[in-house]
Amino acid sequence: MNIPRPIPKEILKKLYLKKLLGLRQRDGKYRNHRVVEIIDKIPVNFRITSLDINEEYDAKLAVFELEQEGYVIQDPEHIYSTYPDQYKILTEKGMRVAQQDFEEMKFPLINIDQLLTNDELREKVRNEFISDDFESATFKAFKLLEEKVRFKAGLQADKVGEKLMLAAFKPEGGILRHPDAQTGGEIEGFHYLMRGAMMWFKNPPSHRTVIYDKAEQAAHVLAFANLLLDMVDQCQKVEP
Image (cartoon, rainbow, N blue to C red; front, side, top):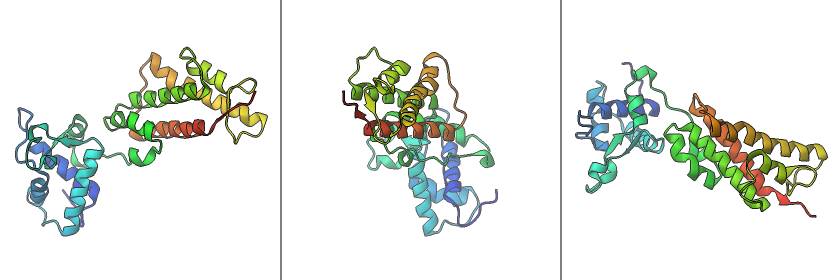
């Protein structure tokens, strides 16, 4: 294994997961798996010279990011230890990655906390996204959009999906309008944008399984939902 120096953070993530996998016992428990101990043993286990101070810092940052991204979690067996946050174990997602060949291990370049600026959306979908449950994450996102429109338009619960968007945004007789829509075409375009979002992203997973092959693909969909939520927040009721 050819490891470049200084060691990039992405490679430190791989080394940490591989080492943690090696400490997992047959009963599913882990031995000697404090974060600092694993980092200290990386040079010996992977036959490289000692980490310098910058590499040690990056290794600790790598572990923090692995936890944020859902690859490791705090070990519940050590919740009452003096330093419980120093004991991490692999999640199912982390296990899948750690079991791959070193060269095949990949980490999505998506930071969901930075991508999604809408706080409510981020809180609703974050756990599903980092657990790779992309279908559930995207469905929740557009369900939230539906709920926001219904509340802002003051419509009843029986207005859902496409019909809700029609009642809220139709050019003639719609309840809400975006302030930037200055022409009839723009008003109609926003109306179709909202109806299309329901018909394309929310309705299908209500009736069948929708597969997202990559985190990046799901992230693009969530970012679109984030944009639409921001636009709905800007909408105003049409004066009678």
